[in-house]
Image 1: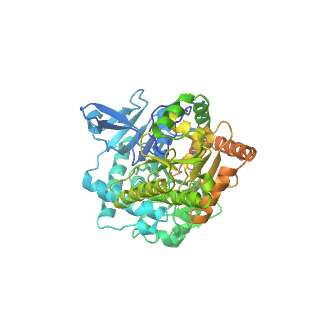
Image 2: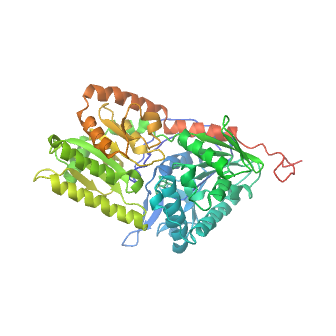
Image 3: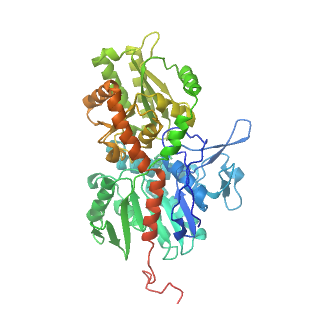
Length: 522
Ligand code: G6P
């Protein structure tokens, strides 16, 4: 596998923009492996059919796909993911493969088909009605339905089988996220012992008392421990995982100093490597942005001139604390009437997982709060909250970041939150205030310079926003410089090189396999 230079249009938040600008060169030690196979639920490119029958390509929302796409563009290899677009079958070959990116192909996307009934159990059921709320501590949202686990297991099995034809003893298989907890152990049974298996868990890992609500807790841990390297964004998630291993698996041993679990004859290195963004690329885009982009957008969205701008950018998900944030804004206008007609809050959201009742209900609640606040405080010439679910291009989002006086991130739980980093990177004039929930992975590195929000304390949320709006520019600059330096240092390229070095170091020495036979060809 060749070394590669890195570029990104990291895009966790809400826009699926495909307008990528090449970034600086960057080398990473991928040459320890001869093939890269990535597995994720969400695909990086989706083909859809327009009303007139023509095909279109979009890029599904999510930091995971946006971060990994440039890696695969440089490294080549195969990305295996669910083909959920209604035009996906039209473009694949007899092996369900299509070369991507569509405009300049550099790697292979292999699509796995999941019919509606199976998707209901695996994706809308076990993954997003049970694991997502459990991992985000939303126990009231966690639902256990008969058949969901069986669907999850079957899809995990299907993905594991699809990996096998691609793999040699020098391959790196990189499994993504909570949709595939069983996959590492399933793959381990099917591939040469020297194949490296990595897993990145992009969401928080729950506390043992929360995790114990999952009936298959042991099976999930057993599955994940098939990986050679299991990574989380931050140490506290990794430590919670190790605690769960000790709690649930009697026959596993945890070396806390080395952060290694020994289980079933092999070791899993558990690491914390926070996902970053290509800060240079975001800064450059912001620097080069035409003023007209914001002027047009603010006219379209009716953002008034001359008021301060508060911004929220989220997937429409209860874990993001959007409803709580809007209620805090309502309290702010109640308690501090001076802000009426002086600050406008723009909230952009991308509807998500709408088949799941909790998400549909959440969307309704959020829109209701927006209407209420606007009704209570709006005037003929000013709406306190400008709310949009429309698609925004990368340039439009950058224009919002640049013009925002503060960004509000109030997640109740969040693996990382790349929006906060994008805001910081786009704030090239070094002003603007980051109000950041202490429940995000991003807070671990940025919390001491950001304005910390405790999303569980309603009083503190509106007070933090009030403070942010009053912060002198000089203080904004001091904080923003540090935030920008840290974001640039722990960039996406740093994330990739750190992880790939960890994979290379953990490449299994399995000259004697667990089955006891020599595997070095002798
Ligand atoms: C989070 C998850 C990703 C997921 C993304 C979007 O970031 O960690 O795995 O792809 O949300 O959610 P969706 O269900 O639409 O893929």
